[in-house]
Image (cartoon, rainbow, N blue to C red):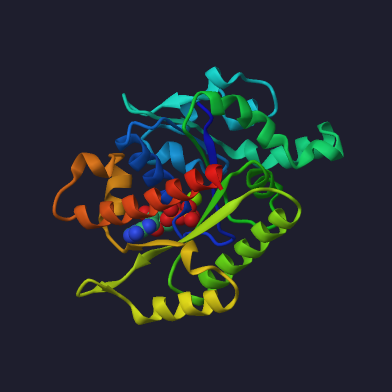
Length: 269
Ligand SMILES: Nc1ncnc2c1ncn2[C@@H]1O[C@H](COP(=O)(O)OP(=O)(O)O)[C@@H](O)[C@H]1O
Ligand SMILES: [Mg+2]
């Protein structure tokens, strides 16, 4: 097995990074793929989203990344699924400092890549949930470790600019020789009569004019209150698939499958 690394990325908060991370793992699990989520967010939303008290973890991503814990000491399993995760805590904010003091300059950008490598023999997908800060080095370490970046965007001007900024950042990595692809998913989209808003279509057109390939749009995820409800209950949406969740589960499946497909085609390209 040689797994792929996906970073879920945006320079803006609240657009759905953690949500998308979670549903990517749910869709992969449905397909019997084994996933490990790495939470690099100080408020540990993955662990909270999967109904665990973050205070109950002795060791977290920080300990693993700084060499104080083996993967087996930090990797948690969600129920009896194929979904595993490495929880985070506030100390993750000190990681960049640790890197600048302890890691030779030349190796700094690939600190996460090096740590993730052994995991690729165990998992089909390693998914990194990032926190929104363009200048955060952790985001850069994550991109440098990734085969694919998934960029969620809401349908508003700020989110659009953030998505375009992410594309520029990824393009820089490509120019520097990294083979990292990306895809964009609009999230919290209002659908009327099965059609997404005209505003979203305009935004896509504007992004295409900025040089984003039309094939980079992986799918649109509707706004649905079931997302936050399921989070609070700590359930997999697929466990409560009903007429309310059916449509949004399909949206997530389309986005996830398009992302997975793009990663496969990279191998053959
Ligand atoms: N498609 C959606 N429909 C409704 N609520 C959503 C949707 N996607 C995300 N949310 C909600 O929006 C908030 C921010 O999402 P989150 O994934 O935490 O964003 P980020 O990780 O980018 O900060 C959360 O409360 C989440 O439940
Ligand atoms: Mg988040």
